[in-house]
Image 1 (cartoon, helix red, strand yellow):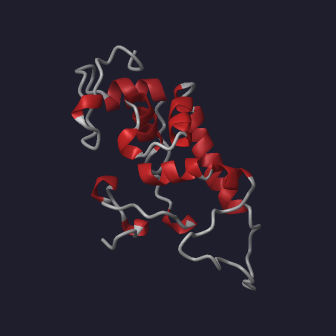
Image 2 (cartoon, rainbow, N blue to C red):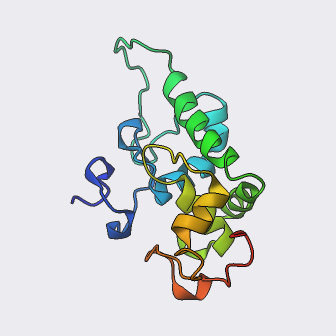
Amino acid sequence: MIAGDCKHCKDYRECKAPPDWFDYSQIRWCPFQIIWLLRNKEEFWAGRWPRDPNSPDDNVGSRIFKSEAYFAKPELVWAELKERLDRCGEQAELLITQIEDGRDFYSLSSGAREVLMYCQGFPRRKIGFKRWLRKVYYRHGENKKINPGISPEVVNNGSENGG
C-alpha cells in the first residue's frame, strides 16, 4: 500500500504514518480518520471541507461544474460521525474532550478508545454501544479486549463500561 493511500486501506494497524489530511473519497472510518474529523469539527460545522495543508491552492478559482452543493459532503460526513458518537452516549464526550486536548491515537484513555473502536468501520454498527462492549469488544466477559491495536496496559477489569 502506498503511504497515505486510504482508498485501498484494509486495516488501520498497517498504517505507519497516517496522512495529515483526507479527501472525501478516502474516508473509510478508520480511527485515524475519525480523530482527524474531530480535530476539524469547526470546518465541518461550517459546511466546509478542511483545506489540504500540502496544497494551499486547494479549489481556489476552480471552475469545475459540480452537481451538489459545496456543503453536502462535509455535512454528510459530520452527520454520520455524530450519529455514531450519539450511540455511545455520554462516553463519547470523553473521546471528544481528549481529541480537543491534543491527544493522538496512542495516548487516548481506554474509555475514549472504546468509543473510537465502536465508531470505526463501514457500515455503521447495528448493535448498541454497551452491548457491543460486552459481546464484541470484550471476549464475552473474559476481560480481554480482542482488538490487538490496543496495548495491554489499557485493558481494565471490565466492571466499568462493560456492564
